[in-house]
Image (tube, rainbow, N blue to C red; front, side, top):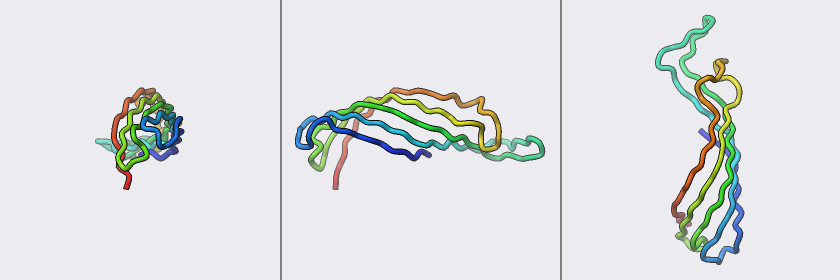
Amino acid sequence: MAVGLVYRRYLSSAHTFVSPYVTAYVGYQLLCWRYRNQTVVDANTARSDGLHGLGVNIGFGITINRKTYLSFFGEVVIGETVFLGDSFEGFTNEIFDNYGYFSVKAGMSFKF
């Protein structure tokens, strides 16, 4: 699960056929799982666990025909996710590393 804020700033007016933009994201991420076998530590039984995370990214994109009902876009983004502290059950996170990423997106938007 992730909840966050996305900012998009267009670099041209809405009536322009090709509209470049910059974008940024910051958000909270929740990673949860269930153990296949119960884990017992200090007389406490753990059946599931989880980690809190923080995600950020920045990117650049182009929207084609954005003022109409049907528009198309392409976007490149670079970002990072950082896991914060111990797991919900108090285990030190030795499994999930922080990671960076690069993504390429393409799609269409239909406004109604």
